[in-house]
Amino acid sequence: MNRYGTGEKGEVIARLYLADLGYTLLEENFRIARVGEIDLIAMDGADLVFVEVKTRSSYDFGDPLESITVHKRRRIRRCAQGYLDSVDVKYEYTRFDVIIVFNDEVEHIIDAF
Image (cartoon, rainbow, N blue to C red; front, side, top):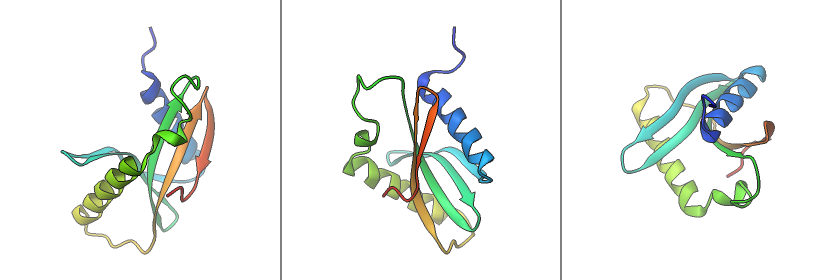
């Protein structure tokens, strides 16, 4: 049996991918009750990056990027604001990236929304 479910496996691949690019991982699965969750929070140089990871092994459930609806983006932004409010650091630039893991291939969309 596989140790990871599809989503968890995708997040592991995304973490390794970002580490290879030199990102510094700050948080995994940052959650605020009744608001939402951010899969990964990382630093890319001086930029704070909130990362949504979408993992697919087929298109049976549609295009992974289309699953990040306006409602989902709003929840991610609210959660990101909660993270920013919880830390004592002021970041000059923040962005929202999407990493799509499709059959172990990675597509990284920088500043996706």
